[in-house]
Amino acid sequence: MRLGILLLAALTVVRAGTARAQEPESVAKVEKTRAAERPRSGWAALPIGTYSPETSLGLGAFATHFFRFGNEPTATRPSSLSLVGLYTLNEQLITELIPEVYWDQENWHIWSRVDYRRYPNKLWGQGNRARLDTEERYAEDRLRWQVLVDRALFGALRVEGKLEAIYMSLSDLRPNGLLDRDMLPGADGGRAIGLGGGVLWDSRNHMLTPDEGDFHELAVMSYGNLVGSEYGFSTVLLDLRRYVPITDTHTLALEFLSELQSGRVPFFKLATLGGEDRLRGLFEGRFRDKAMWCAQAEYRFPIIWRLSAVGHAGLGQVARSAAEFGFTPPEWSVGAGGRILLNTDERLNLRADFGVGRESWGIYVGIGEAY
Image (tube, rainbow, N blue to C red; front, side, top):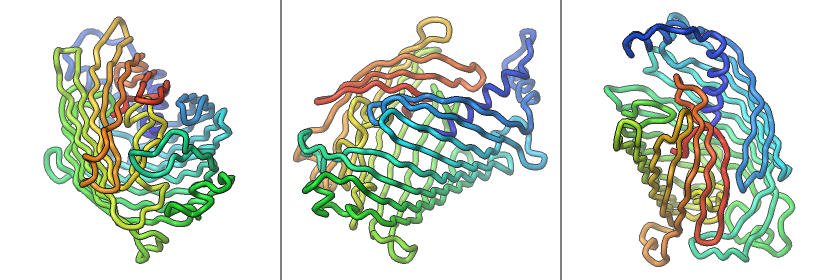
């Protein structure tokens, strides 16, 4: 789930209470007026519901306190402290606490998340050849802390620093399965702690539903004994996105995503395919390994009023190294979906997507776009 998006959903509710009718004005004047009317601080709470093949139906609640430091303009993004709790029909418990701070006219940004989940899950081994009939179920108790700090340099260029600390405990292992026989790193759980950083280029015209611009990220993370990790490995992430306006209302969204890892990577930190963001239609984590690439395209277009639709397709692959990508064919996913615009100011969509792959399919309901 994207808690930043849920925060904006909550802010949508708060701002709806202060909205006022306006006479026709220039776009710039309207935006300036709307910005001036935004509250400096407030509280919001929402019931939330999600659906995916990994969780089935999930129900819970979300609350946030948003605020702005000092004399920060109301046109800037608000800082916030958010809390979510979710329970699913698959008997999964998910809780998250997320502080997020903006200051100096958004030149500085700190985001953090502390989350705990008790999560019955599935594993099919490692690699692009993992067979469907090798499925084994297990239960995980995971506590995770993430921190991201980024600073604007000039134009759309930003630099970032990252921290991640995970403690994993496993139970209910399948007798004589991969985890029970300790056939994969991480089968005993334990700690994975890493530090890293990267560079960002973000020229999107909107954070949630862009129809023009680029988002590019190159980041490196290193996990090892020096920071208390039981596993020593590194990860390089490359995320390239482009949003191409075809007409005033039609957009082609493109993404290329890649992860390359080296060292002793626990199975729960391997690069994965599947889920609501990467090749919709594949179960999240259906394929996992030390190297991954994924290329996706999505065509977005309006239908009527606040309703719109998308068609999406993607290819992806995992392997033990980038040099082995050519030994097996890539996985694929195609599908379509619908959108309901919840708020015109924030361009916040409720989405429902259907995706199908070579051996599976899925339906995903949630807030915001896949990328």
